[in-house]
Amino acid sequence: MRQEEKMPWWKRAVIYQIYPRSFCDSNGDGIGDIPGILSKLDYLKKLGIDAIWLSPVFCSPQDDNGYDISDYRNIDPIFGTLDDMDRLVREAEKRGIRIIMDLVLNHSSDEHRWFQEAKKSRDNPYHDYYIWRDGDGVTPPNDLKAGFGGSAWEWVPELGQYYFHQFSVKQPDLNWDNPRLRAELYEMINWWTSRGIGGFRLDVVDHLGKDPDRGVMKCAPTLHPYIREMSKAAFQRNDLVTVGEAWSADIENAKLYSNPDGSELSMVFQFEHMKIDQIPGKEKWDMIPINFLELKKIFFRWQRELYGKGWNSLFWENHDLPRSVSRFADDGDYRVESAKMLAILLHGMQGTPYVYQGEELGMTNYNFRIEDCRDIEILNMVRERRKKGWSEDRILDAIHRKGRDNARTPMQWDRSRNAGFTTGEPWLLVNPNYKEINAADQMNREDSVFSCYQKLIRLRKERDVFADGVFEPLLEEDEKIFAYRRTSGDGTLLVVCNFSGDAVENPLWQEEQRGELLVSSYTEPGETLALLRPYEGRMYFYQNGQ
Ligand code: TEU
Ligand code: CA
Image (cartoon, rainbow, N blue to C red; front, side):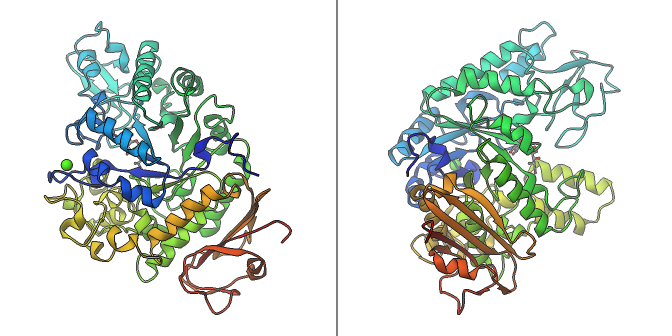
């Protein structure tokens, strides 16, 4: 029974995230660009993905690598031109791939024309596009802190006012309470849709509704009404996919963001499983070891409770997170097996899977020196933690484990100089392991991480059970095995993964015998199904009643 007619395309899709700076450089300036992406579309077609989420390529002074936009309707010259972008949309479409743009609507760059105007005078028509409070230049309106260090309020002496910014000082928050601003943003979104864009990822969508005077930075009562308004004005036509990034989302509000009635967004991109190694209430640099039972609980809860009531994103990585094989598995001896195991575990669940560039190769974290880091979040952390008296070793350890630059080292294409990313000097160092880990080597090898992803992506399109199967957790209390079953009219999917570096007994071996092995993290079968080798992950399918 194929439910294709009723089901939106993105429920069967796998989305690939490109961080354009680090993907492929076409002109030797050391920075990836749109022509570079064009040259790799066939690679992505071979992988089999349905859509590309493109991190921001709009005009930007690059204070936060494009998440500080100075013109929403143009492409930054470091990435190319509007013509290149149109060409990307067309060429991707020829290969059955849609382009999802990354909209940063919580803030703009301070170099945006609106902000330049806004700070000219209090009665400038753009003044009210941002959030201002009177003051004396000594004591900010309150003690809210910005995401990238310091106060969230910045003094502008010419105006005798502070502006509000949740991220860097170069990222002033837009005033969503101003209907003129909102209308202008919706019009801009529609302008992109008319150029053939297939959807949008909404940066920090939970921050659009806020009440800074009461210390509320996100999820104010205005939030969901604003999202519904935007959805009506800009999203509910065509068959756009819309993805809301929300660090604060829990299952209850995820049901709103991804309401199946289509009133808000297609899906939520939430991070509960990504907070697993940090001390609750503290920052990501304040780390604790991963509690595997807790991790399982989180995934299982989302799978069970969102079923039929919303739609989740499935991911281990993005441009803000460390490499998953280094963080959750083994980037040494079992790198290949454990990278595949993570993929198998994730791709059997309900939701839309995301593959972050290089994840399909099992790329790893980088052994940075502080002076080689470029990320604004890392640089601020270093300043703040040194002040707090952290040792250099402790700071370095935090960067190696959690720093965003881990995910931003250039894509490893082949064995040639700079991993084939650029002919010039790369903006961020290339991981020296590119000779062993690269796309050219993996693309045509059956036993590669790449091939495993390719299989998983294909399977999702072939079988309904991936999109609609009912989820049943298995072995919930097992300290090493992550296992579940999904059942639909189509049949049953069984996923059994050893999340540890030890061989373990497998209580599910008899059920495995009933099924057809779809994917495994090992190339050769083991001596017996009753044992799982280190990081062994297996996915089976069987007809119901079989
Ligand atoms: O990230 C959301 C966000 O809250 C980040 O600051 C996040 O907490 C941090 O990256 C974790 O390390 C989005 C973008 O994905 C990120 O790249 C931007 O820097 C941020 O918004 C501001 O636009
Ligand atoms: Ca370039």
